[in-house]
Each structure stands twice: as C-alpha cells, then as structure tokens.
Image 1 (spheres, rainbow, N blue to C red):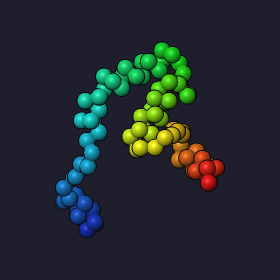
Image 2: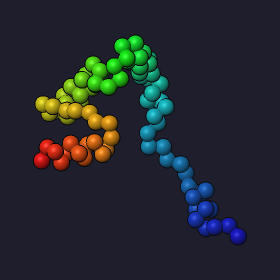
Image 3: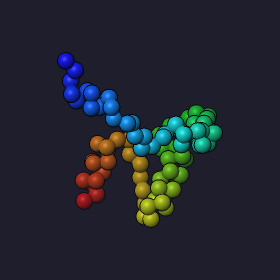
Image 4: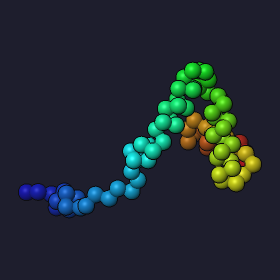
Length: 83
C-alpha cells in the first residue's frame, strides 16, 4: 500500500524560486577573476576584497560601516558586544 503523503508529493509541480545556475552563468567571468586575484596575492583573510565587499554592502544598505564575519555564531557574538 502506497503512502498517501508520498503520492501527494509525487504529484506536486516543482516550483523553482531562484535559478542560481542561471545567475552564475552571467557573472562567472568576474567570479573567476576575483578568485584568481585572491589566489595570486594569498591574503585569504582580511584581504583587500573583504574591505571592498564591506564598503559596497554598507553603501547598498545605506549605513556608514559594515563588517563581515565568518559565521552566524561570530555575528551573534559581535551583536552582543555592541549592545
């Protein structure tokens, strides 16, 4: 006997919310160029690309400062330190 839930999900139409592959195809040359730049200078942590990203994010959201962190845990630690 088949599970009713399985039959329900098998009959559902798949809905794609974001086509990441299609988005990447448009920007892959820029991504590969940035990766090569980082590999050449070897500054994987706090390199110039990090500063550039932080500045662009701050501009985008309309704030003076922005800083990147490596994980959600680091973000939470910084949040509580700032209070």
